[in-house]
Image (cartoon, rainbow, N blue to C red; front, side, top):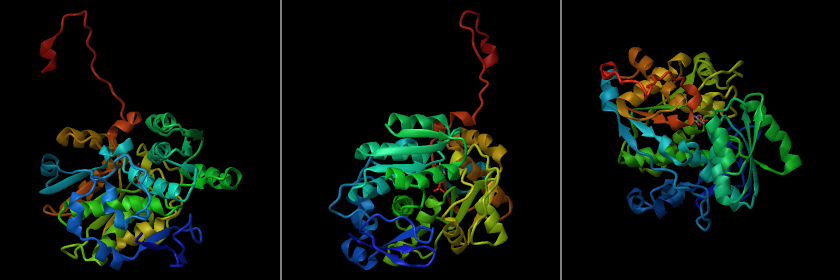
Amino acid sequence: MFATHLESAIDEARLEAGRPQTMHGGRPLWVRYDLGAVQRAVRPGDLATRVNSMWRYRELLPLPASAEPVTLGEGMSPILPCPRLGKELGLSRLFIKDEGQLPTGSFKSRGMAAAVSMARHFGIKRLAVPTAGNAGGALAAYGARAGMEVFVFMPDDTPIINQIEAYLCGAKVYLVNGLINDCGKIVREGIDKLGWFDMSTLKEPYRLEGKKTMGLEIAEQLGWRLPGVILYPTGGGTGLIGMWKAFDELTKLGWLTSSKLPKLVSCQSDGCAPIVRAFEKGERFAELFANAKTVASGLRVPAAVGDFMMLDAIRASQGWAVAGREDSIVPWMRRVASAEGIAICPETAVCFDVLERLIREGKIGRDDEIIVFNTGAAQKYPEAVTLELPRIDKNKPIDYAAFA
Ligand SMILES: *Cc1c(COP(=O)(O)O)cnc(C)c1O
């Protein structure tokens, strides 16, 4: 066990790691490790022969070595070159890291694998989560895998696939006539009455650790260096914050061959862009984004408890927070999948609109090495796309000339 303690992200207070913890002063906790001991225990080259999942980074994860992880094989998603799309955009080195290939079809599996493993380690049996969609599906799956009871609260217009996946995994699923923060309030107020553990984004410290593995993985996959720019669709922020934490730990471990860190680009939809607003105003904390509305359900987070952690990371990386246009989402989904065969989620479509804008503004250059995260599979969002496909009557003569 290399995790030594938890540290408040707002005031650096030290908390004990050996028992369940939630927040401190209403703000999230970091998991801290004895990196010197990690350094002595493992070298980067040792990892190559290990299990092909995020659990290969075991020394940098909070689960004690004696405990078995709750796993569905999450991690090691491919970094796919996108030469055709890159050429269209005038870029020579464009890649997509495809998290849509993970169990439950999104990167949320990484966080829930770590958090549910820790919950089981602590003997917790009943979990609850407010969700914009994918986190509920992932918690239901990992909860089922661990034999736990799971309660999921989601807005009543959450994509139907998220409702179905949570239901099929045996979770108790409830639809709320509000947004994720309204669902969060219900979970919070039920803690005492129902004795469940709150698995909300950044309210327990371990989902972040699971998501951190995206950053570890990029470094290993690129031969222990990092790309120039990372575009990430941000809602609650664990993906972005987790990767920045990974880069910090890798730097301290001395595992990176170059000290140059990527610029982080936080991408939101103009239908819900609280972090972009705070970034533009130079603020460290974001204000509630009123009337949040976007088909990119993972980005429909009007207020994030880790806002300052996101904004600190974006600024430290010399990156940007930028909003993509809501009405460009479906065209980008089609354009990217048509060019490269990678079915990107609406959240990632927003990143491509942001990418095009940053190229136009000269902030991203032609030869920059760029990784765009596809955080989920397009197949989970049937509501996003309205189809009018031509029909064929099998009983009538076929007009083959019309196909050309
Ligand atoms: C949750 C989610 C996001 C946002 O991730 P955060 O870590 O909450 O910022 C982006 N894309 C998809 C597909 C998601 O499910």
